[in-house]
Length: 229
Image (cartoon, rainbow, N blue to C red; front, side, top):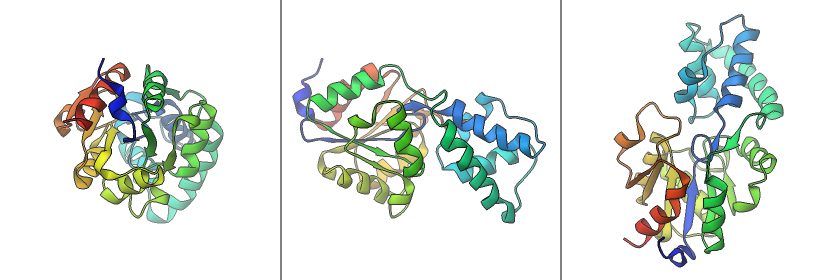
């Protein structure tokens, strides 16, 4: 085990969907409710998982297109509102932290790290999930795309999340699962850890993370290695 005291004062920014929590069952479940309401066949969970990570509008757009029903521009606002209304009530029905997540984050927080959520999900959708799963206490800040100057992969989203937690970019890193996380980290010039079990169309290994992990048990050591490199 690495010397975790090296995490004291560092800021660790985390993506939410596909990184901290396995939220695909509730997100795709809500998408399939919309599809059913429109008389369109449901999408299998595994087919739709890669559509997650770019916000609800993009998920809806890609889900409908995948089933051969591109959405007319004038219909999106209605579909989005219906998606949000349903998802708000079901966002933690099946969503759970990935194995080892809570334990790893608890260890790093105890060591003095600041933890922040940097997600393209709306903040108002993100914070209830953390509360329902009883993990909100782990985080010093939650910055959804709506609270940032621009969403990931823009560096300003990551910078806003780190600053909201009271951290500084010279001792920060990004933990994510997809190209949006990789892009934000590279643009902000901070170390990047990707998980191999998330939601991404491009395999995480091909996004050239500084470290690729396969389980949260590996995360504390990986953070120490990058912050002391």
